[in-house]
Image (cartoon, rainbow, N blue to C red):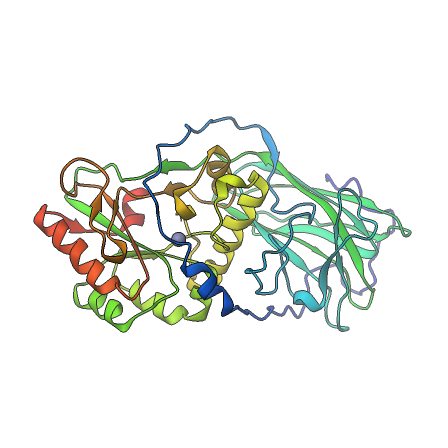
Length: 400
Ligand SMILES: [Zn+2]
């Protein structure tokens, strides 16, 4: 068993050796209304993006964990209660980032279980390949601290320590994914009534996922176009009615905050078969200005939020401002995304721009936004498609 750092102490503080917590609680989902106005002004597009760099296809061993050193500060907009990249059952009342005595860098995670029935678990979803071996490790400080993974498709023994004697100790465990595994859930936790613990420098070492594919249209000979609608701050009954009346398959790219504000709306407007809800980042920054690790937080945290709200993990990422680079393709892949999709036509806010010669063509991706002009914008896009002999189709079934 590859649990080299398991301490010689053979029993935990509980009568059971099962480290699974009996009473997990979900952190409350909160959102900030102030973000609506702040983001409305910045969602326009100046120009279509260039083709972007070609992906590289190396499968070197990398650390797949998101925000592994707890160095990435929380976005002021992403205030729904989690540490970037992580989801802690006790929320911000239990889990905080501290600059005091980290193992490395400038910060570490400190969890102080708030009640006797909390083990202070923090976890994240890690995208993996099937039938592949990964090594997970973390530096921890405290009493009875555990590191493990679930959802691997095979049993995994967590690594744990009875005490780190006040210093830092590295826990390491290894797992091999099952034939159907696409994600695993990596967790760290303490133990009931054992006080606070600290975590830093988490690693999930394994082969890098194949970078996502960058695309501005869909390769198909079918006479179809794809209607994609971004952001989500303005949700009008007129747009909802238009989508329902015309049975339009819609690919929605809402930001997590408007999605959490009105998940019922996004469920209704993506009710037509072929529709889906996909990833558009957390805070709508120009990702090409961010290092890979911060891009990964933006894409993975939006994925987690949308997955909780709508029950399906996104597989398509729409980069804000259509700004992306090679790191975006890798960061997206690290979050389970297979396509980074821009568009080649824009019918937002009264526009009728096709960014290639001639009229709309098979496989074109049309950009729209959830605005108060959306019903009219959809009508114009639908008329342009019909004039070209094209039908709206669902994106996800064509891409993957
Ligand atoms: Zn946007």
